[in-house]
Length: 326
Image (tube, rainbow, N blue to C red; front, side, top):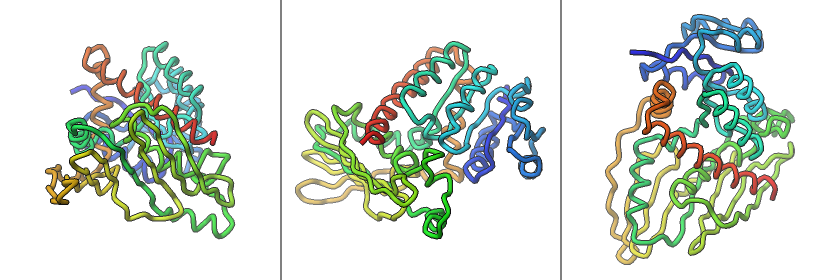
């Protein structure tokens, strides 16, 4: 079986998780890791048994053995790094948010097409089997009266903010903040299930560093509204819900969905929706799906999949652009 030779940028826990998922998928082999320092790069190489370690950016980019590069650096670096990867004729898997403006999104995807390469945004949940099952369940509803989607989880790095520091995820310099981090998951869910909203109305609670610590956005559709609640400085135990005239779909999460039920709108009788058991590594689904498109980009099925991911991603970034402006 042909495998993609993988390079990675970043040495955080999400990079570790993606490497493990990529190797587990049997579609990738870890070729090289990049970090700004030799010691960190070599430590990462040893830990994950990579073939090479780089701290020199240009040498990493020009390595002809690398087919695809996974980018998990701070948000503000994604665009510049992904552009460099694509211009060196390699595929790019970019952690969400892939970019920090709609103009960057357009330039990045145009560059990928020009160079005959694939760039994808690693929004893990839309590739998870349970998310896909719920998408089908929502489409089967007789009508939609609205939804409330929540993802708020206290970040341990907020403790550093409270002590006077400014970690990247809470820094304007690195395009941090709640909307770009957890909020994007709720936007992806809303756009996946209901399409592009007619208008966006957002309300953000800023913290000392200048970014949004938590926020609420209302997406207006012709016949209903969808409310998004997201945060990095609080934890919400509220379920996400999708409403119709007959039933309410109740979800325990937006990402890593494990439990869901249908509740009768009149009797409140609850019916459990049968979902798959969670994977040991939740990034396995995106890793597999991305590899299929990159290994066989000429297949009509894969062309359509990439087109749909791009359509969805661009709409998500249109919504995020509205949230950021407001």
